[in-house]
Image (tube, rainbow, N blue to C red):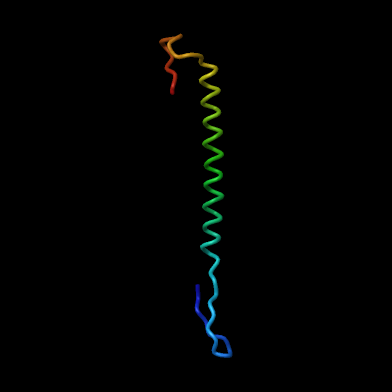
Length: 64
């Protein structure tokens, strides 16, 4: 935010929208990361479903 004085001597401020741009970019990044996390959780659930219940095959370790 910049403080300026106009030609009449009246003070005014100029808002810097960089913070808004950063906030928007961070939000987009957070949304993208959340989508990736949800995809990975779905893939893990599918892998668990394909692997079957733990203990059926002692040679295979099921992550959980």
